[in-house]
Length: 303
Length: 330
Image (tube, rainbow over all chains, first blue to last red; front, side):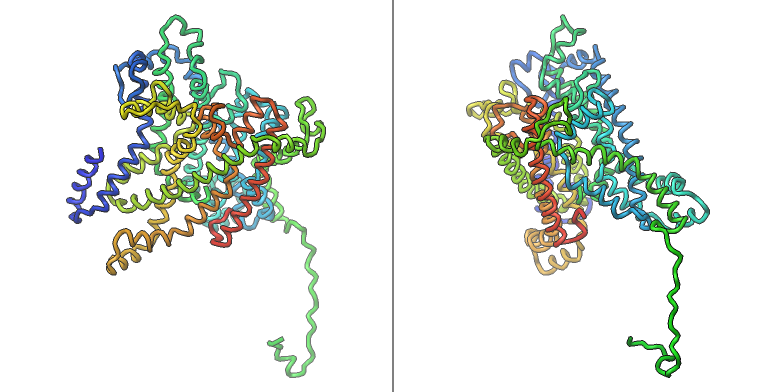
């Protein structure tokens, strides 16, 4: 593979008429190797999911499909209820959490971005302090289960992440860079704060809202933590938690009453489940990669 | 008094300024300002209530570390027991083990992560104009989107005893197969690799942004003076990146008492045989809380983590502020 990369390099250098630079060629080779190492684990999972169960038992996992078959996928998709429900839970949680979170965080961030807001300083500290100090898992767990009664409740998967101090601070910085004159003009024309916020601040801030929105989506989509703490009811399992349960207990899939009587492709089905669960989202995230990169470099140093 | 009015110098009667009594201002300003303050506060209120519930109430809840918590009595109703929970916690070997693992593994992560991210960023910068660099970046960034649950599948694919890739390779090389999930001594290395795999793409993006921000004139001048690539890196890139490096490392040290729960819980598959090297404060707290039902022990360990973590964050930020105010958290 490295050889292929170097050939590409020499082609590129011919085009730019630059002399062949050994440092550049070396950099290409090393980065190509590291890049492949980053992707190999995924190839392994995909390969196992497409392998024949008996071949796996004999030969072990391989980086390429052995005895190519899509049986594991047809097996899962025969009774797709389990994975579809998990998709539904994750999609619902992600949509609600992201939209709600963006709105709530912006509504805190905008007042804090206003230099003429009297409570700016104390409230900024109030938000900021949550970054420094945290009560940790135990009080949080007790609060959620005993006092808020959110065990086995979808809200337990949504509410805790909605207001994240970090996002509030990034939004605040961004809002404070909006053209003051424009907002002042609206104020003189008699627009109230709420109207200015919804009709001017939010529409003018689409780029930062898109970036923070993506971080929300990533966080909710990939979350297993809240389900691990608060969800026992298997109809409420989000995707990541379903995968965890499958990993911890391979019999979970076998114990599905609808599938009794069929040979269970345990190894390949488990990996196929992982592919079905993260494949589409991964593809989407990679497409949107540049927005993540922008987000990391804006708030990155502080992230 | 250096600028006395001319009238005073000429001896004319000095007009004593009559203190104008301002209309007593309301502490929240004029009517209009009050209206603004009210609107803005109402706007922020829902979010502030969220923080109150999900961030501040748990802070208050830390007092259970000093109580014998019983579910029926709640946090307020349970009996005070002073430092008993801490005596139990620190009376065991566990306290030492989880502290050592948390600090040790996080230190390894900081060192290896910083070096690898920097090296990749420097290499990336060398070929930044090439079309291939986009592909490398995508491949390196890809692990950032993968949750630890899925990483545990990846690691399992490599390490599981019968079918994993690692033992197949060992077999081909004629080495003894290793029962990875029963051999705690290998896990610091495995976890370092998993962490590197997960974080170098992200880390190198930050450093690459820093390198791209360096004025190209420095490199041009160095080239004219005959400096090679290595010398340019040694004497220009690294020194100019140093503030960012120091700051990122300090901020990481500020969080050194908090382990990445997903990495330490899912990747070793919560395997008791591996606890001697993989059990960290966060996994211990979780296990005590949900599996062992030992809430007092969990609360004591959590309190210990919160307080030490807070001190470290504040200290790290104090240091960062002394280096460069722009980068500190506050």
